[in-house]
Image 1 (cartoon, rainbow, N blue to C red):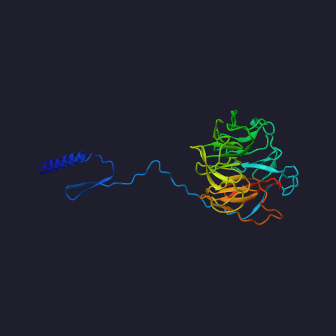
Image 2: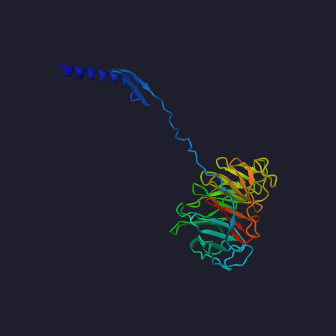
Image 3: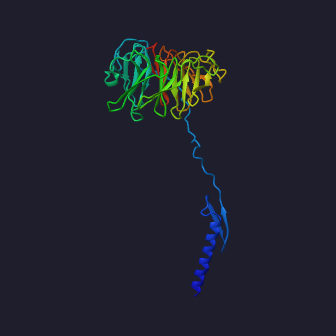
Length: 359
């Protein structure tokens, strides 16, 4: 009998609790606890801070590299003879201009006369016998070698005498695409790959990107575009941030962030209306003659300005790379293009006929 009374009391208690919880819109939308000291006295909601779905996750960036030295990666400084092989008098380049690499040790070089060279991981110079998309000799222009594990593209380059053409090929397949620059068919000045597998291209008349899988092109900045100060915009280089979806372009004397949504330019460093070599923040720092830019994982931009290396910090401060110990009689003062290889950089030097590695 006693046990029946206990069960009856417990059933009454549970029923009362259930009705109480129902009155409080049970189950609660937030975490809750209740206090119990022999009877249910209080049902208290404990609010928690819920994360916002669209809150961006902060990206941890490394420090920018501090270059200390440089040495020839390929070619013989001061020797313009043509030849292949490694560690021999024949291992020479002749005015290397455009360089790229695929993050697996393979470096591609396009020389001023449009001849192509491949450098393997040991920097052995080889003249490629192209097949597939690479039939014929491509005209001199920017190159982009894409890591095979990241995208289906193999090579992207400026080809053919008819103008601004870009070609791609699926890895291991015969499928190919050919796309014409939707801005104008002027000679390409730069190519870069972003995180969305789009190939950004600049020529004298504007900025466009190409889908790296099918070649579909979109013009972002068209002919006649103006800088934020109203002067004509003539891009000469492009670079994509390796960690965030941001693209930068450069004219001869300024660096801009591309505002793709508004098809506009945001001044980052330098001045579109004034040339110089002054260091300092936006409004003070000046560039003389930009030929190439590359964005490091740190978010810092390395700029080739009149043959010299200069930095742009994420806040837009220009600083000149301190001079490095000369390699024999040679300094870094006539370089043309830069690409990052992790914390090292590869620099083409057409005047000294060499590819430098800076670390």
